[in-house]
Length: 124
Image (tube, rainbow, N blue to C red; front, side, top):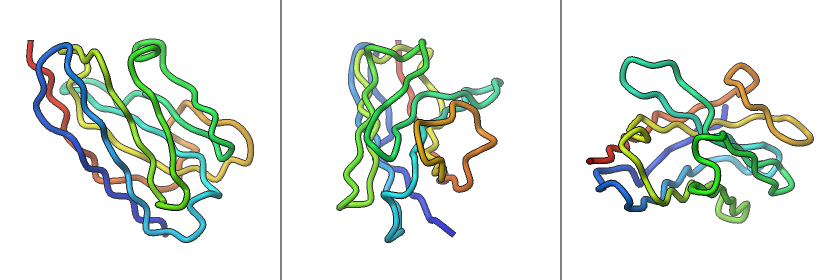
């Protein structure tokens, strides 16, 4: 199975930035679309964004224009750059891997592998 490890979370003030990383110990990392999801306290886990095998990203409306997903297949790593952070972005952020051939899925079910999550807290 694919092992995914998120890092880069922490405490940041509103308006600040964080860059999350998700490293995979997987020689075929390039064969996966990679998604980012988050779970805020008391809420269901929700889609944040995802990047396809071909490097095309899709974002939830709530983060569009503020977050950017990129990937480096040589490093088996996907990134989530978060700018203009808001208190409502506070959540545990998870990365996940999906073997979809084209595009991305925006729901949890198709993703086969998940990281442990990293906490992002945005102070107001």
